[in-house]
Image (spheres, rainbow, N blue to C red):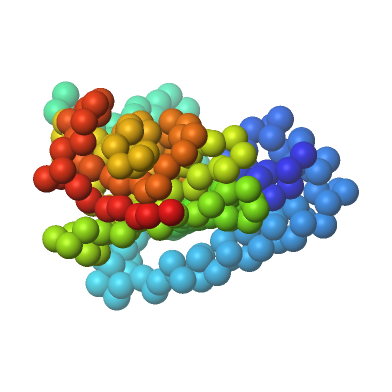
Length: 283
């Protein structure tokens, strides 16, 4: 079992708040007996709950306290008014007398006496409800923040790993003694452009990396050309779905004196468009 994932799943917070099912509690009790990390996580969650309870605690407003006190006094007065001042003696009650309950009109209802301590329980229950809601909201927000942070960290890690894989791939090409690295520099009107051609002298395989080239417009595609005996020969188009910094496999070239890249219509052409020449480099 992945203990770190189990701890971060939220089961410990549910257990501390009393929201976990019997099965979850049973499993947690079995794990905590043999795992110090889980036991420590439970202790930390309980401590956080106690801290939150201290933060949420607040003194009762004076106005509310006075209002409750006035209501209690009123209820106590009602109870006193309903009780007789003195009880009748045995002599005052004849053998034939029958004590009848007081008659009530249809519109009258008996006064309900509410014990004073019930107000205290109602207030305590309300405060407990507010505290529970605050605790649940606190842990829910923490969980959401943790998920967002984890997603952001995972995305950054995936990006770094992808970049590292590209660099490792290029490094393996550069380190191969059979491969010649040919830099392609921007032409006169595009001096900032730059690309790399990796040409395997043994297998004649060609790899292209667009180091610093602008994104192609819709319907366009970069095409690599090998200059063979003064004539351009197509070495294929750079894949549209490939990252620019990746070394993509192109068509094999048996011999060449130079390489160049033009921007052509999607799918490439048989003859290069010289007005769309971007970079070139001689061997």
